[in-house]
Image (cartoon, rainbow over all chains, first blue to last red; front, side, top):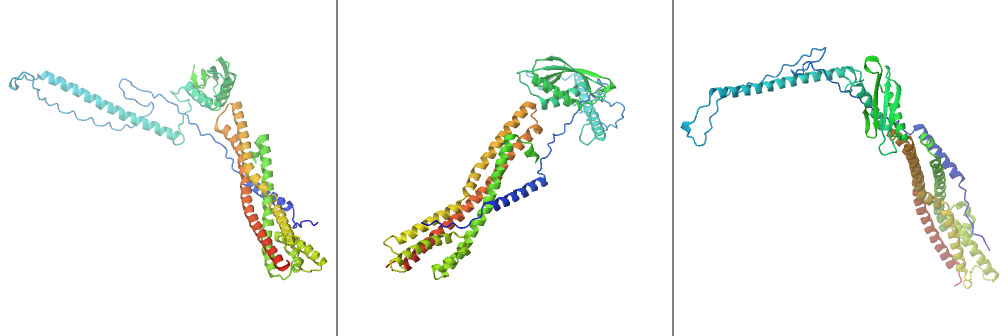
Amino acid sequence: MNRTTVSPERGLGWGITASLILHAILFSAVLFARFPSPPLQEAPVYYVDVVNLPVASPRAGSPTVAGGSVPQPPPPAAPKPEMALPRKPLPVKGTLPGKQKPVPAEESSREFEQRLAKLQSTADERHQEAALDAMRRKVAGSARSAGQAGMPAGTGTQAGSDYASYIQSRLRDAFRSTIVYQTSSPEMVIRLTIDAGGHIIRQRVEHSTGDRIFEESVSKAIARAEKTFSPPPGGGTFECGFIFRPQGVGKK
Amino acid sequence: MTLFAGTGLVVKLVLIVLIFFSVVSWAIIFFKLLQVNRANSESERFLEFFWKAKRFDAINAQIDRFANSPLTVLFSEGYAELKRLVEKGDQKEEPDVVSTDLGGIDNISRALRRATTSEITRLEKYVTFLATTGSTAPFIGLFGTVWGIMTAFKGIGETGSASLAVVAPGIAEALIATAIGLVAAIPAVMGYNHFQHKIKVLIASMDNFSTEFLNIVQRTFARK
């Protein structure tokens, strides 16, 4: 009887040591390189206030800007009225060309007046358009000078701004990221009172369908939106009711 | 690091298992690289020495120089069996003759085959772990990812926010399990294929050596 000779073999010990060293090196490389876990940034939200521009004389249709004298470009020259040439009389059925009646002079002058009036109204329209263009240019220029290029500088406090719409837009944006509900058509009406500093001092639930999760999401949206509020115009408090539905936020 | 710290218990366990698989796989890869490379180089050197040598006893005296070669094991086994048969022939007063009547050559052949089998077993030891790691690690990682995503979605449902800032970190933490699974599996599969090829080459050289050894024994010692 003899036993099979087995060639000498060292264990896995040194292999495990080498493997642990390799893993330690890799781990420290990853740790020192600080594997980028980029901070997720939400895209900046730009708010735009729609401002109703005052119109000096709506009937005349020539808007002006309060407090500013805008150098208006010269209005485009009205096109020259075409000379009203007497029309060639159409041949009347059953009458001979030689026996045709002449057009009365009164009729042709009335026609001329009508055409002239039409041309004048066209010229007025063009004039108005040119004036509006000048105003738009000025408004755009002032916006650029107020803030960053391309960014609207609306805070909801300018004259003509609708502060309730301003608050509504912020609530709508905040509500979009917090909305969650468990009933089919939840609804909640909340009356907000905002102080002169733009902080909510009171919120009263006027109506709710009782969806607790929806109510929580509305509370979160209000808390989130409050951070973006600017003070109401006039320096006083502001109070308004808002209706929260899955479709969005509305004013009461 | 923050990704690992932010994961749940199940994902952490999965990651620990995968890291263990990776460490052991690399340990086997290092060990086998050295073992197979030594076996190859020493086998070449042994064959050179074997064909230059005139006598088996001279080869047997120098065999410790090639301790890592599987061919030396074959030679030792074959030589030991041959020696026994020769000693038996001495008792019958027929020195240097191997009795083929009693299946002397077959005895040597069996001894060589047994040595070959034991050497193949030794060479293939631990290689199966590489195959296991290569085939299961991605699935273990995938399990961790699925679990992590399930947990992340549950959290999203509880917070009630579905923004990217809420969804993305949970999914990123879950995906790390798949990444580690692949990191463990890819070297293991590559190592497994490499060693399988090298071991096949060694098995072929062992078979060739066995045949040559038997030929020499039959030519030199067998009774005519």
